[in-house]
Length: 340
Ligand SMILES: Cc1cc2nc3c(=O)[nH]c(=O)nc-3n(C[C@H](O)[C@H](O)[C@H](O)COP(=O)(O)OP(=O)(O)OC[C@H]3O[C@@H](n4cnc5c(N)ncnc54)[C@H](O)[C@@H]3O)c2cc1C
Ligand code: FES
Figure 1: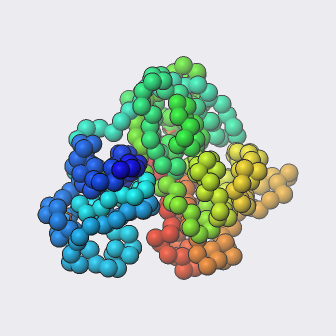
Figure 2: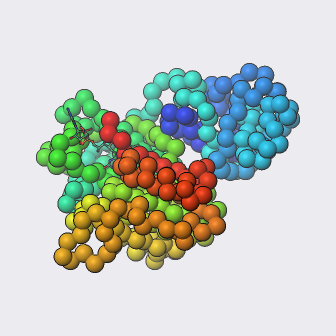
């Protein structure tokens, strides 16, 4: 019987990937991996083990209508004590990871390989695993990790800019604030060889199998996880749907990776990019204003999957526009770069 990769995502954003045999129920596959998801009857009657299968193929054995209605089953809610996967799957559980998993999320000792400014306020940080033989982090494109800040006891959250299939070296785009623990480290002290601990992965903000056109809105370094998604789309051939990407920054000097976006088009993504800056300068010939001012009805058409990433006010403005314009909230995935 075949085995498939199953990613379990818990309410607090922690995710774990297990290998599940088609013969095993998800409950059993979790148990084999020392993950104790919530169960009670184990007969498909109580709904304690309910989750939501975000993507992938599966079968459900016997279950009662009280535990899972026809409508719930049609919406891909699943009873994991009755679930056998038939392909790689992603399953979300409505409770925190500590309920099911003993121990802390995985950590990797890394060292800085590259730290370089890529715009007036953004640095690219590339780190590499020190133990090259160790198991690599397994993440979904769009997810993030905690990075320790060298010389301090602090850690901060950053979204992977590299795709999951690139292992051993990990890229992040970090906005350098005037004051801030990580900002000051990156601007003033960071150098190749510095040791950084990476912990994770975490997050509900990840690329779903594209079945509709995609609309992405990225504010500042909110572009980082979109880059991971684009590389993943190319690697896995998920390029059938058009992507409209709206990018925003405070001024033209803050923009980064804009010219590089053309490479994704050359590699097969039908990508249209529009950029807005809050304050233009004499050389700026593009749009001025907030990135959310670029939202228009033609970008949502007959239905879109929406990915929003960046500062909280941008996300809130975009969510409110999308709701007012009839976009189903279930299709909207967002990551707010809230300060720690
Ligand atoms: C899920 C997630 C993913 C993220 N991904 C990214 C990413 O890919 N790229 C990215 O650039 N950012 C990302 N962030 C934001 C990131 O985690 C940090 O919040 C950001 O980089 C600031 O960190 P810092 O240590 O430089 O600033 P902090 O030290 O956390 O300070 C944050 C702000 O508070 C202010 N401040 C600090 N101390 C005080 C004080 N005593 N009194 C008043 N104000 C104070 C600072 O001036 C600064 O403006 C993400 C956040 C989340 C939650
Ligand atoms: S444990 Fe009761 S339905 Fe699965």
